[in-house]
Image (tube, rainbow, N blue to C red):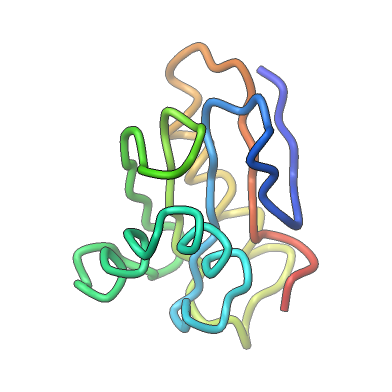
Length: 117
């Protein structure tokens, strides 16, 4: 299963899974804003509902998100961006990998884990 880390989402990507890092102040995240735009506000509505946790390492799997070419969108909380460091990214990515690693995947893209804020 090829894995890539991206700073921007490529809608032409051949990924079948997108893993998105979601900070507690998700409105300030350019990665979240980008995916929210592609889903015509669907993602923002879900996050505003507080049904999805942004606490570190908490995950939510969403099947066939509208406006995205992926079959699965995995959201993983990274908590407060002020305390974000490589170990936070590592643990969050590991939590998401547990979710996506149980099945055969064509390609998995991790977005918002590096070089954004």
